Length: 187
Image 1 (cartoon, rainbow, N blue to C red):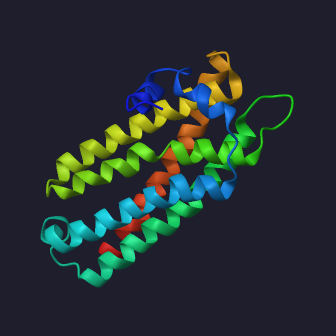
Image 2: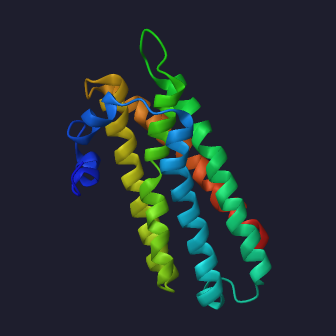
């Protein structure tokens, strides 16, 4: 994979997706290579922001609450990925259901832009952080659409778009739930 491969994956159902479709990692491999580092990055960035810019994000919130928020973020990520894999598996219109491990891999790839958007917490600017989070959500939708097409549908059709909308809608609801869960200890 070249350094531009992840960017190409946002815009095309070919390129790097072809390489990914040839490999079939186990659930554990996908978890340790994608989900664990992504969720740990988000958790670490939440703790960083709490340590150095906590007064910008929650002036009255103690660091102990931020620790609870970061742990909730990590655990909900670990639970959301298999849930999304199940939704992907149920949504694919194929003669036989794809392997759960392949659905899990796509469900683990899709939130990578959202996890990377947590790097913006290095800057204490809530509006900038939210804008980058929304861009990450959009990029996740693009990865989901092209991943569904490349790995399961192969026709870039209306049915792929419909499936992507369905899966993305469930994913967006899951992320809203995660965001609400994260806000609970801060209120």
